[in-house]
Image 1 (cartoon, rainbow, N blue to C red):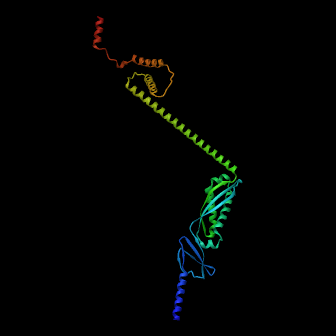
Image 2 (tube, rainbow, N blue to C red):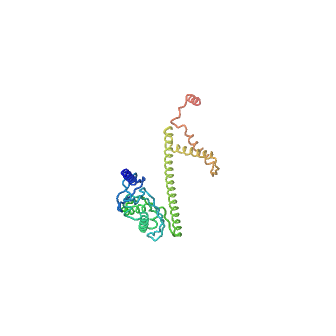
Image 3 (cartoon, rainbow, N blue to C red):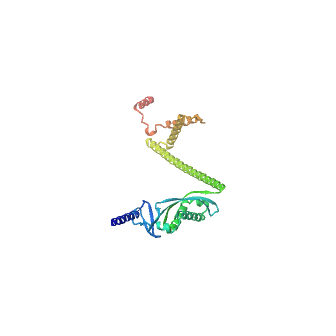
Amino acid sequence: MNTLVWVFAVVLTVVGATVGSVRRVNQGNEALVERLGRYHRKLTPGLNFGVLPIIDEVVIEANTRERILDIEPSDVITNDSVTLTIDTVIFWRIIDLYSAYYEIDDVSTALKNLVGTTLRSKIGEMDLQRTYSSREEINRALLESLDDATEPWGVKVTRVEIQDIKIKNEDLQKSLESERAALSKKRAAIAEAEGKREAAIAEAEGDRQAAIKQAEAMAESVRRIADAMPTQADPQDILRYLVMQRYVDANLQLGQSDNSKVIFMNPRDITENIDALLRDRLVDYPPAAFRQTPKAEETGDTNGQAE
C-alpha cells in the first residue's frame, strides 16, 4: 500500500513538472528564459518544453513585429537661427531580443532621445529654405544615423518620416508664406509668357506656310492658264485676272457674313478696273494665231464691190 502511494506521488510530480515546464509563445513574439538568474535560452513562437519551475524564469516576452514610435514635437534651430517645431515618427522593430533586453534599459526612451539629438544635429547644419525643401534628405540622414546607433541594441529602424515642420515665429511664418505666394505667381507668369511666345511662333510659322502654299497655288494657276492660252498671251494679264478674281471672291464672302460691317470703298474704281481688264482682253481676242481665213462668201462680196 505504501509503495503504491509513493508511486502515485512520483507520477503526479513528473506530470506536474512536465506540464509546468511547457511555455506557449504567440506568433510574432519571442521570450527570454533565465536559469538561476542567468540567461539560459530564447523561446520561439509555439510550444516550448523544458522550462523548469522554480529553477527557470521567463523574464521577458516581447513583440518582434514592426512598431510605430511617435516622437513628441521638438524645437530645433536652423543654421540661420530660425526656431522650428518638428514632428517626427519612426518605424522600428526588434531583431535581436537578447541585445534589446540586456544592452539597453528602455528601448523606446532611448530611441526618442536619439531621434531628438540627431534631428537637432542635422537641422543645425541647414538653413530654413533647405530644411523645407529637403525633407527626403533629412529623413535619409536620420535613418542612416539611427541605423548605425541602434545596431548594438538589436533594434532596426526601418523608416523615419517628418510629419510637420512649423515656424514658431508667426510673423516670420506669414512672411515666408507671402514669399512663397509671390514665387508661385512669378512662375505662373513666366509659364504664361512662354506659352504665349510659343503660340505666337507657331502662328507665325503657320502664316508663313499658308503664304507659301498660296503663292505656290497662284503660280500653278498662272502656269496652267498660260499653257491653255496661245503663246502670245501676256503673263501679266493672267496675273491681273487672278488678282481681280480673288478680289471679287473676297468681297462676295464678306457680304455673305452675318456680322455687321462698314467698308469704305469706291465701287466706281472696282467697275472701272474690271471693265478695263475685260476691254483690254476683248480687243485682242481672239489672237491672230487663232483667227480664221476669210470665207468664200466674203471673197465673193469683195469681188463684187470691186466690180
